[in-house]
Amino acid sequence: QFFSTPVQRLEQEMMKQKTRNTKKPSHLSSHVSDFQPKADPSSGGRFRASDFVLISGGQTGADRAALDFAIAHKIPHGGWCPKGRQEEDGILSKKYHLIETSSDNYEQRTKKNVRESDGTVIFGMSKKMMGGTLFTFEYVQNKNKPCLCLLGISVETAARRLDQFIKAHHVRVLNVAGPRASREQKVYAFVMKVLKKCPFWGSESHATQKED
Image (tube, rainbow, N blue to C red; front, side, top):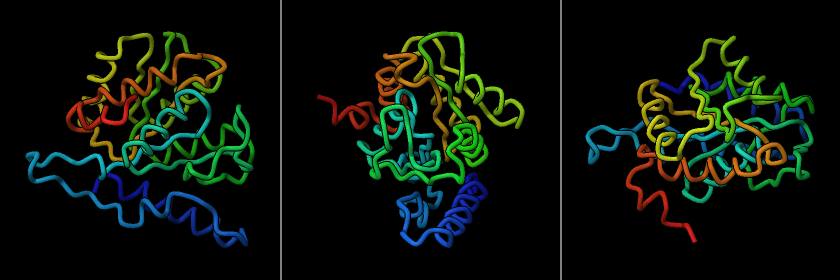
């Protein structure tokens, strides 16, 4: 089971958080409790989108696009966010099932999302990484975990490479990272288009059924 270890670690951390808080937090448990790897017989053993988890840190831009895509297409989602759920645009909505870390430091949630995933994809409109995006890349490299950088390329090329990356590394928990909206205003739309175009989710008609 490709993702049993990261999912188990998420569940362990969630149990610890529940004992610390009097109020039950909104987190990933409702999604991963029955999250089992079941290949779809009708697709020649291919895994279904429902057997997959998208995670991110919840920041505006690339992070938020991944979560919104997951919610819109009923793909389990989650991840770690800073204590207090503070993001660039305010307090992160509870509709995003992210777990708060013990610190409001953004780097802590970045590290947890890298460690608790099978692979990380970094999006960007520019080929140059800066700030938190660069930190994410360097941390992934330090941990020697699978990483895909989709920087300054076309939607079609990015979607094809993402599909190949997921299959090559048997990714079932995918961490999505990239610039915040104030740094790259168009990155949200780019991430959404790439995810919708990615063949892994099934037919393109399924991935685009909720577009306006």
